[in-house]
Structure formats: structure tokens, C-alpha cells
Image (cartoon, rainbow, N blue to C red; front, side):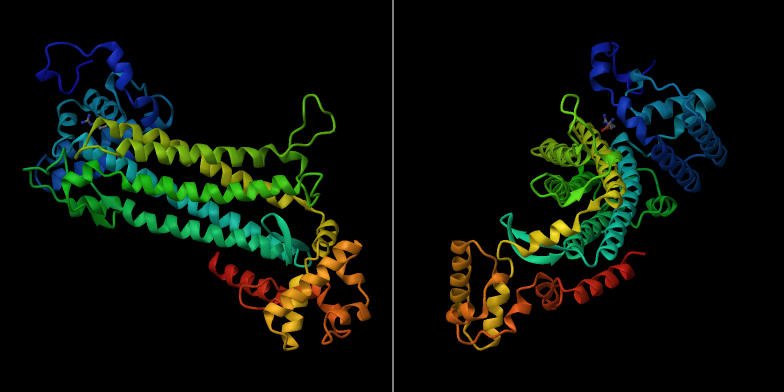
Length: 457
Ligand code: ARG
């Protein structure tokens, strides 16, 4: 197979080098975008009178046939043609002859590969945003279904204060909303046409980049050809947004793993989403959640890969950049799979709300409520904290709960305490009273559910 650069060479590329330098084994995934880009490019070339209408029409027709071939799995990808760009171009020339050889006018693989990756990431990012949206809605549904469920809220993984289970889940809706906003914002920087930058400095031919940008639906056109062929910020940004989303999924996965332990017993993950042990018959393992947590490492690794590939690269295009694709593809696949399986696993989780509620009432979790009760009776907060600490210590030493203290005993700690204190000791009352904006009271949680229902169409 003749190489497009064969004019300058006396000897053939060694087979080892062909195998080492090829990217077709993975960049064939970009075929659709490569063809879309080429069709827009060919139309622009003829509109500008750089190639004839007839040649342009033959190119477009040929490319559409190639697309059909690839789509139906009939296309033979060849390693000796290195990458997706040369595979398609070579097939075109085989199909339509001389006209096919005109497609690469005023274009280089350097701007072409950036174009393909941008078209690909734009589409995938939109899809990821929509999957995040579905996951957020799933959280809203579960939250609405469990408005009565009270659980212990944790700091330092020590029981801190009672919260609504819904409030806890809405925390993930917030995280996912930021993730989504980050992805949405990143599209601005993906959505820039690099084509027309050619190898590095533009072209002497009278191309019309505005036309191509419009044809391909790009909002902006790159303003510096050197930057355009060497920039992969948009891909790094995608990997970065993905890493943050994976970090959120991993925290959720970790909580589901913890909550499903015998030690917590807060939830039971359904059989479909758990696996057994080949040796211990009693086991039910949260493998899906564990794998989501584990795959987070891979996605972080992909981000670090590309950052490291780019570090110290002189301008402009360098072949190192070919190594951008594997981490990007792997991240797209991993993130989508994790978001999807999490979305499917959540609705089947059984919440042991009785157990959660009992746990929420233990460990003196309403101590802060006593302190704030005292504040309302004009005790300075620092003193209130001290008094409450003494009450808790007394209970710990006697091994009794706050609720079982007698009023007379309580009064001994502070004369302002009266029998209305008992209502603040109840976890449900404690939750209900936290009605500040963004707090855990049912009214506030309902407000947030309503707000998100409007945001998430
Ligand atoms: N396969 C290459 C890549 O992925 C395409 C660009 C090649 N350009 C070049 N000048 N060798 O980056």
C-alpha cells in the first residue's frame, strides 16, 4: 500500500513501525465524525472554487457509501494505513479515483484529528449530561418516596445529628448538578472549529472557515492555527469533569457499601446488583458499588495520562498527541457505564428505615438541640455547649440515653430547663426544627425537591 508521503521516501516503512505507530485499532471509533468533517470540507472546497462541483459531489457520494460500509461492518480497516483519516481517504480514492485525491486539499491530519475529537466529545458530553439528569431524577424519586425516613448524619464518620434520608440524597443531586454545569460549560471550549489551521500555519488556498463551521454546527472558529493543532485542553477538561463526577459516584458507592454492612444494616441492595461468594455461602457482596469506586482510579489515571502527555510538548502538533485518544475513549465508556448502572441500582435498594431511625436517636445525636434550646432561653452559646457536654458525659457514665433523663436531673444542670426540653430530644423534632434554607427539615427538603423538579426536565 502506497503511503501518502511516499514521494520523499526511498524505502518502505518497516512492519514493526507500522504496528507501533498505528492508531486505527482505536481511532476507528471516530469514523462517523471523520466522514461528517470531510463532507463539510469538500462542500466548502467546491463552493470556494478550489475543486469542481463535480469532484465535490463525487467525494460526498463516495464518503456516504463508505459510511454505509463501515456502519454495516463491511469495511476492511488496514493497519498499514495507520489511522482512520488515511483509511477513509484511501478507500475514497479507490472508489472514485482522481477526485478522491482532492479531498485532502487545504487540510492536514493535524487539524482533521482535532476536528474529529471535538465532534466526538461534543456528542458524548451531551449524552453524559442527559444520563446525569436521569440519575438526578432517580434521586428525587427516591427522596420523595422516603420523606419520613430519618437517619444519622455523620461527620468524621461519627453520628452527628439526625437528618432526613432525602436530605442526604439531595446532597448528591447538588453534586451532580455542579458536575453537569461543568460539562455544559466545557462544551464552550470543545465547540470550536480547528479545521482550516491545516498542518500548522493555515493555507495559501482561499478557504471559507465560517462556512465549514456553520455546516458542522460549531459556535466558534479557532483564532490561532498553531494553537489549534496542538491544543488538547478541551480533552483534558473533559477528563477533569469526568474525574470529578467519578469522585462523586465513588463517594456514593462507598456509602452504599458501608450502609449494606452488618455493622450499619441501613440498606439492602437487590439480588440483581450483588454477587455471592464462591466459598462463603452466606455472603452478598456489593460488587457493583465496589467496581464504581475502583473504576474511579482508572478515570483519574486517564486525566493524569493526558496531562503528562502534554507536559513539556513543544508547539505545535507532535505525534505524542495520538496518545490522547485511549484515555478519552476509556473515560467516556467508564463514566457512562458507571452513571448508568448506578441509576439502575438505586431504585431497587431497600432502606431499613426503622434501623436508621433507631440509630439516629442514639449516640446523643440531639445534644446540639439541647444547646440551642438553652440559647433560646438566653444562655450564651459557649455556656450552653458546656452545660450540654456535662449532660452527655453524665449519660455516658450512667449508660443511659438523653431521652431517659428525668426533668429534675436535667434542671440540676441548668435552672432554665423545663419540661418542653423533651420535644427537642426527639430526632423527628430535631429534624423538623432545622428549617433554615438548605437545612434538613421536611419543609426545606420539599422546597429543594420542588426546585430541582423545575430544573430537571
Ligand atoms: N493519527 C494521528 C493522531 O491521532 C493523526 C494525525 C497525524 N499527523 C501527523 N502529522 N502524523 O494524532
